[in-house]
Length: 233
Image (cartoon, rainbow, N blue to C red; front, side, top):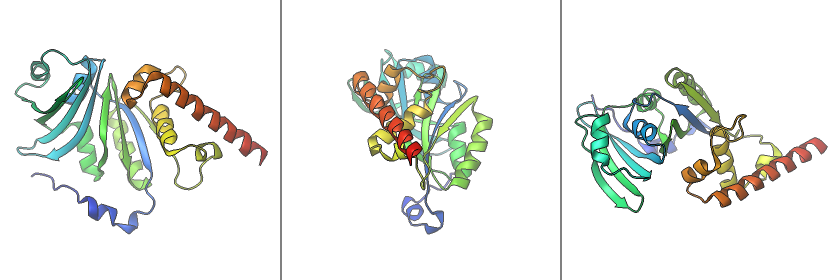
């Protein structure tokens, strides 16, 4: 039975949800678990972004997928080698990027979204062995989703900012700086050892390496200032 799509306007008007945080996940799935992960794992120079998922027919769903980076000569043949009998439809093509629509069986991540009634925040980005996405939902729903996701992913990290109290350093960040901070933290940029290179993160965010380096330096400075402020209050 084809799943019934959620009604975004009804979801926005549900007062019982209360304040809903946005949690960013970075996960590692089996390279062959879905078409985007297969392409991203086979070609580390690519960023494969799922722009949308629509219910389809015959138990399959429609994926709109943007492929950025070093485009292989014949992506159609490559897709067929990973998933036979899947014929991609080109929706848009430009320098260094192509958007395809494919009809495939639901992947593990989509099945989790459906099972928990959670709409993902698109795009869902696949780069190398990493899948990065975010979900906005009440905390109990996110916790249940996280517990189920742990059983599907071989590696998983999350980042979130409480809707109530926020450390002074984070309150000093602009919305753009906060977005980059959450992305960098979820991607393991500040882990030891570091889990993502600066140039890869810049590519995924669509900014230059120098701009991102300067932005991260500003973020780190503000957070350190905030720690000094909190310690003196």
